[in-house]
Image (spheres, rainbow, N blue to C red):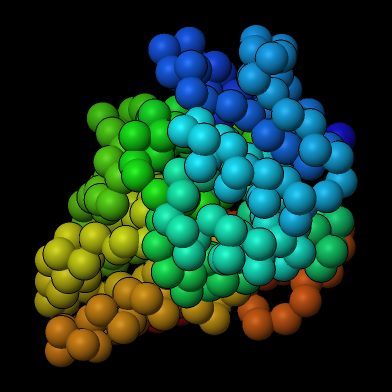
Length: 318
């Protein structure tokens, strides 16, 4: 069973990654799909059904998966490799580092269950993956918000020369950004909504939550803006400085990741080095701890990722 992050009645699109990859592969014969026994759970089964002769099932052997992808990339192909984020960041990290990143090979690593998107507990919750891959030289790091973000990111990461790590929302993925005339651009942060009192600087599914929180805050005459940062590396320093450096606003970073080494610390570092720290700064992130197992709505409330928790955190600091 795939737990959904969509709210009841929220518009969704099925398997946006799988369908976007199929559409691209029709025009790009060098694209292949590879996985470690997880095609069904990373939406790569859509690609496997469309291009069975370009799909490689490597079994439960993530290190082998990454090494084989490196070899295929050396032969001129563009492998899209899928697994769970915990397996890529913990189990296969050294193989990604030595076989792919050091050689700057054209391998796209797309991983499901990022952060707190499963209730299975620490064995499957990749709460530190952004910190791990942001620290890896040559690696581009993407954390999309919704179905539109994923669909538009796929062809751009395929065009990008070098390795990419992209977090994946799978199954029926919410469609949120369509209503904001949003377009994904690799390496660019986008001001999705402006506001005078609060600026959320968010990434991944937390952009979904901060947009919802902004609407709730507006009911109390609190004007909140949302700067979506889908590319964690390289960061769009210019846009972050321009928006977060504006005076008179509380700046709140929000991420589905541990408070250590992710978006919040990266933004704080940018502002500190530019001597542009706002008068109010707060991080919304997961704690530096192994998290509980349970139902996702309960866990998101417990660890501060729910819309209600975001609203309460902002009100407590205004």
